[in-house]
Image (cartoon, rainbow, N blue to C red; front, side, top):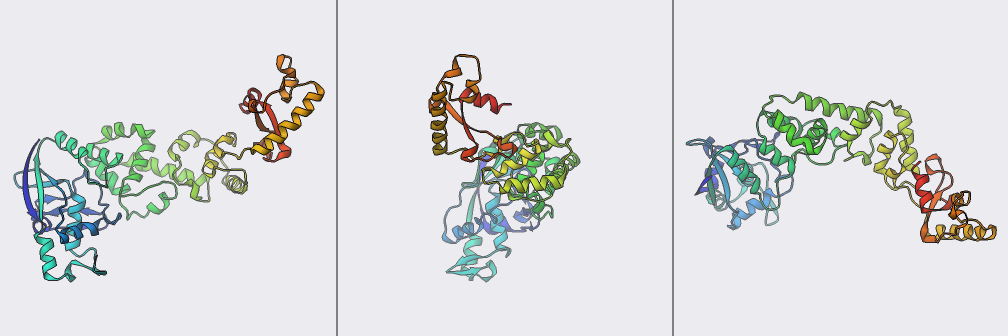
Amino acid sequence: MKTELKTYTVAEITNGFQYNELEGRGLFGLSGRLTIQPEYQRSYIYAESKKDGPVIESLLKGYPLGLIYFNKTGPETLEVLDGQQRITSFGRYVTGRFAIKIDGMEQYFGGLSEDKQKKILDSEILIYECTGTETEIKQWFQTINIAGAPLNDQELLNAVYSGPFVTEGKKEFSNSSNAHIAKWSAYINGSALRQDFWERALEWVSGGKDNISAYMSQHRGDTEITEVKTYFNTVISWVSGVFKNVEKDMKGLEWGRLYREHHSKPYNPENMANSVQALYADPFVKNRKGIFEYLLGGGVDAKLLDVRVFDENVKRVQYEKQTTKAESLGISNCSLCSVGHDANKTKLWKLADMDADHVAAWSRGGATTPDNCEMLCKTHNRAKGNR
């Protein structure tokens, strides 16, 4: 890949600037010769992260903004390879899209003094113009990042597999004005602009995060994303159908995996809602996020709930009681060993070699209280827990 260092002013770069506020896309600069956000670029995130103001403040103070890279796509045409966040910030400010604080007051570009406007527009930006193959450009793009805003995994994959499939995917899942975002956000962590919903959709339809790259490669030339949208909406509909009440602990769970494992099972939404509320009210349940997988699995794997264990004092008291009784009877202080036929039938275990167990199983309503505590040798306790 060849590079050539050039200098452009902010006025030149933002000449002809267009910006679609709904899609968050800076479209053109340099009088239409510059594509500011090629398909492989991330969405504009500087406004969301409040970094657009400092960019303009740096221009006013004469601070260097670092190198920006353009890719030559034709004799007279260019696209931004790295720096589109900064350039979009220039364009949005000079076209009156946001204000910055100067001397404690909000100032739009049009309200600045003439000398300040001139300082911004005359600011010179160092640009490396690059020429190379698509592969070279994509590889270079993956190695250069703006400080403080590194590309995440999905943004990199969008770059590698840019094309009509990514274009359609970003229109649906990376558009922060999509009316469905609020519903999706009840179950999925992240931001549309950082590709989190697009990534989850691809993860679910491909069968796992490790499969996303292969799936995108296979579908790179597709002009529609029907399969992705259908599968994604099916998962969301299934979750909201099984659990009729939306709880904050649902957010960020592995719903794609849970759908694959449990969607063929019948559930009664009313019973599920009552079970969720009962577990929420149980003071011994420490991991509320595990409630949903626990119920989907039939209420068997209590480890998902991280049920509160007996404290050390309760275990010590119960151990002393059992050991005193066992000594007087000449049997093991583990009740299961004492009814056996091996050498452990009369063995007195040390406290460190025993575990506390619920006499009445927690999964069947047994409480984590002293009167429901029994000390068993570790071997028998683990065997009991596996049944």
